[in-house]
Image 1 (tube, rainbow, N blue to C red):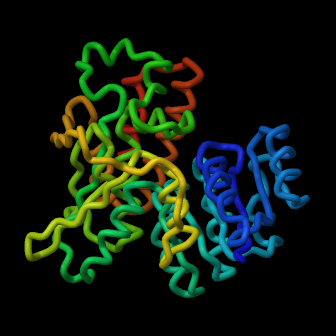
Image 2 (tube, one colour):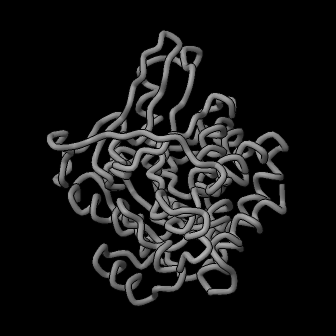
Length: 329
């Protein structure tokens, strides 16, 4: 039985992680939970999973990780607060199921270097990186020609630049395929989520930025693909459900017999489009930041976090997010 610690257990990924674990009580045991501010739900979870090892708030989470005895930590925190606890788990040589992309965006080189040193394992939970991780097993690193990172296009895929000027918070949060938290939903609307994933993929898979191509795929069925030097393209497909990725990060090399809805290709249409970088300059921001170095990647991430927060507070417009982020490049 694996002892599991969940950071951010009351958020979207945290709750879905618990849904997966609920199906396999003989395989996993919850040994710790944290929440940013939802004390009521955190206490309810602690009671259900019979653990008094809980932490409320965003301070000293790394210390909480340090004192907890676990085999796997699911990092479902939002923002740069996920970096220190990830590092603490790395120092302990543990398995990190990582849903906190900011960790690798802002501190990826150090995280991967220390993971190698301490024999810790970083397992991606994001659907795209989980897909790439699986596809890469079809060949070796030297045989990889290109990583194809798919993108749903978000709620504004078909909106004109003029219409985007009037985009509301409600509009931006209405993702057509995925059920996610507020911050990542806004990032999906700006495609900044995909920009961060480009940087994350460079760090996680140790590839060159020019080896990553972003393709808009509105149906969110192909979660990403890898092209090899012989022209073969290996893609990973599935329903738009984070629980599949979570389960794999918990159990690999085995796969768990999940009871959730499976993908049927009957009556499905798969379409692929180029990213409109004039409406969504976020993609170019990622390549610019990578060219300048990790400090700029960290600045990009921080500027985006602050801009998204201000947008959610109604202080700036949707298009102002791009303007704010561009200033750090």
